[in-house]
Image (cartoon, rainbow, N blue to C red; front, side, top):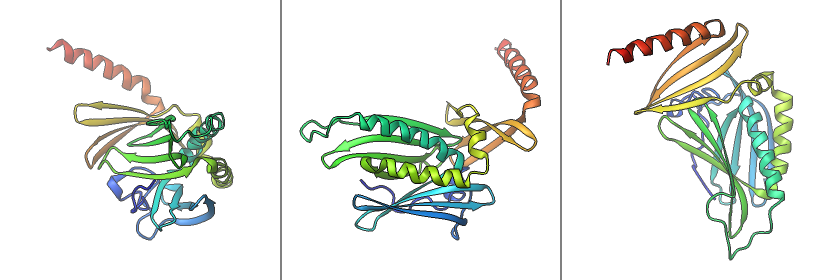
Length: 243
């Protein structure tokens, strides 16, 4: 159960990510750190901060020294916790592992979509037991980073994550929880992402076009949503009439 050894420390630089922010080679400002020992692995939960905001680095160090890590913004980590709690409840209702009749694929699988990245949360099993595979994937560059949490340690992992979010969330998690899930559509060889956000000026929607390492975004304030939709609908009808 091992993944990338490079991890995802440079959020802003790797694959052009629009995620937690460009921690860069020197890393963001460190706010807090927790260490967990689950089975033969050590896990680190680090709260960091940079110009784009706060985020959590989740790192896994295996017994042979290999390192895997993923990053989540505070709002994404809060959403992940909901999926994690769902996985814990599901896991507690399972029968013991039958080494002679292992389930192929995932026992349970959920996905979080955040702009141009996805987080896959998969509960799996093998002859050694059950584990949670958490993968951070990018549309641009097709990079994948992942950690593997022993199923018996999910509850302890969740408790530490909950405490860190409650202490270091500056209101982003609550705001994000009230927003609809981000949407994604692939058209030909391009990906388009729709996200509803909020800042001091009010709510707005970002529409991002992603192709390879290219990314272009527009922001539409709430005051213009109706006009934007009306013009778009009318103009597409006019274009179709020309066919």
